[in-house]
Image 1 (cartoon, rainbow, N blue to C red):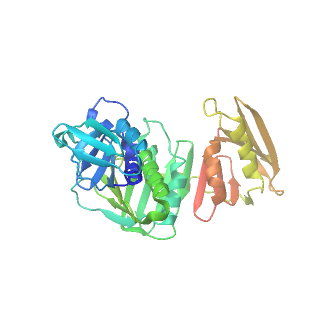
Image 2 (cartoon, one colour; image 1 turned 30 degrees about the vertical axis):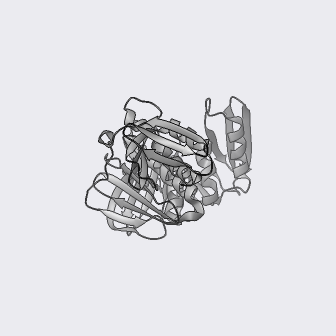
Image 3 (cartoon, rainbow, N blue to C red; image 1 turned 90 degrees about the vertical axis):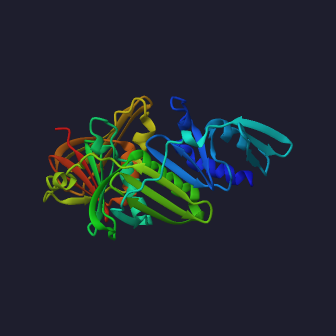
Length: 349
């Protein structure tokens, strides 16, 4: 087979390949007839792969050897070793038996099934940027999808909320499911990797699992993982409490540049966040980190604003800004809104 085809398949599955041998099979690529996958005990990435192997091969070793191979490569499974032949090179690797495999495709009834359109993928991308990391708040460690005829996607880090409203229905059944951040990242990375080869993406939701199928010119890919079973946060109730009759004003033209300056002077290790402060007819954007300090002042078009300060992630802001057009400020929250996207950041008061 073409070495580049094998290497591409292995790299697609690599996000679920563990680097430690606590459970040996989880650090191995698992080959079965016509496919290869990696499984990290949470999710699996399964990729079409034209081999006859039925075994597990250590992931980092195999990927390294394939990267050094010639244009063509042959893999032959013997009783105890797998032969890897490429050009004048001949190698042998030990393997794990199929009885050691831990992943199985789930056999559960479908609760919802829908296509991941560009609109839905954009919403997933924007919301995934605002997911929290606190394990004590598991409902905030993934993107909440409100499915059905009135869809909405939500994410929160416990100080801010992102809401995205897709243009069309997402599935037929009203249902809430929380997609873990790791699976969001795997979906988006796979879409990027397949790029022009990608024809369609489908998501199936069962009682415990998410099954995402990528149909492509070559190869097809399937991601399988458990969704979070914790109860979703009552985002709409929280957002209703943020509604206000305060006037809106256009986000300043160079606002994105002010945020970019904050990103440049703050480091990920010592980041204090991006500070937004309003006071009467002014809006300040500030940031300070290991590399320096940045501050920019904007006028609010003669709209008098309350004295409010919020702290938010400059990375979150950067990802949101091309999708929001105006801002609303009251004593409790600063809101940024666009056609489909809303971003709420709570006041420090």
